[in-house]
Length: 192
Image 1: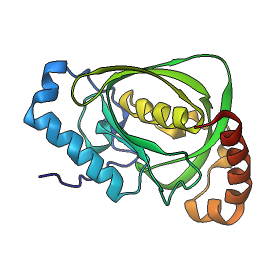
Image 2 (image 1 turned 90 degrees about the horizontal axis):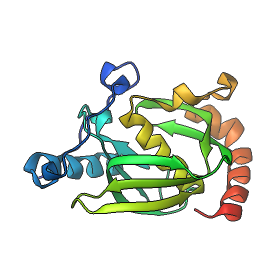
Image 3 (image 1 turned 60 degrees about the horizontal axis):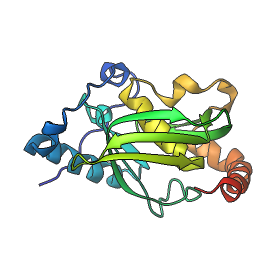
Image 4 (image 1 turned 135 degrees about the vertical axis):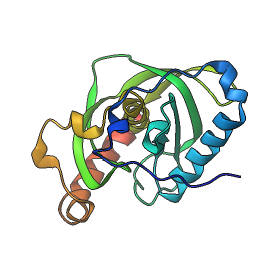
């Protein structure tokens, strides 16, 4: 049976620790399988685009990612449910995009961060199958955000211009329209 887990918030020391690699043999364990199911349920219940194990206090390199008609991020392209174990991200070029990000571990705050537009993501899935995928655009940003969690980083660490920080309410009121117009044009240009 899966359960919704408590999501740790900024200031909790576990969010600043690097998670350990998962031995592929562990993926068959009841504990890891239950953790993955709990991550999916917790992410969906919170309307998140992703959730890393560290965000629920489990210090293993596992994250789940999914975007499907997300009310928090209606402009994000769809991402089918993806379980990433021991992910490694490699930028494919120097192209960057400024993305306004939020985080379930940083409630009610958003800010602009620079993310690589094109990345290679190597990881195992929940069955232990190796994947080597290229991710682009906002999807690449989502993978980078979740992998940062596994290294003990929050999006706040990447905000260079603190004047872009805003509560969700103020973002919706003053900044959303311009951001959505800009990011929609970006998505149309680069895809996902």
